[in-house]
Image 1 (cartoon, each protein chain N blue to C red):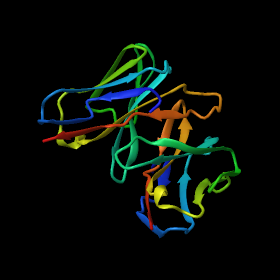
Image 2 (image 1 turned 60 degrees about the vertical axis):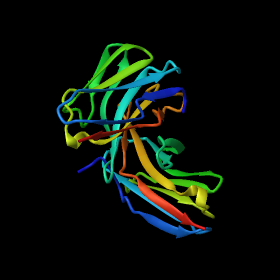
Image 3 (image 1 turned 180 degrees about the vertical axis):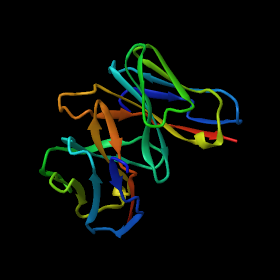
Image 4 (image 1 turned 135 degrees about the vertical axis):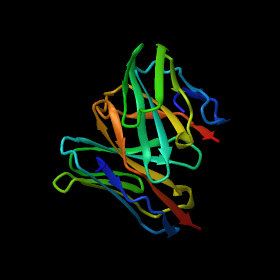
Length: 109
Length: 116
């Protein structure tokens, strides 16, 4: 079993919809939870990170962590075509990052 | 791209030939990483370095070697390329534990390698 599981999708939504992405993990020692965004043929870039359980909001993006269920989520409100990308969850583990498979999102205009 | 340059950006090579990919950083970060990205697998760590001449294996290190003789350069070598090593390779840099304590990594643009 992989340490971090993520449904690869793909996910296609109309412009303005709420996008919901999630990951599960197995290592209860994980404390930091990150979301990377990767545009086509580019390297991933850090979008958001959270520490421990709870919510964090940044503009149209909300990250949630439920450590009791080992489950993290990313919500994108009022999605735009420019949000079309692959979203990868990641968790630091001994100075390295363990990534989920990534979910490819397409927002249709 | 946080001062990271990967070269070459694209390469086609034949099975059995050695291949070296280069990652160069201008940020003076201590940690450097090589990942490969394949559909359905996300990013998988091949090798990483935590200082000059200090390297360690990741989860998919078989068939790969690395070297870091200078802080700014991290080389990934495929000793004898196989078709299963066709992939997109990403170099990343970081401080291991930054001010956020989050092990944020900054990625290069990637190298698309095809082994025929």
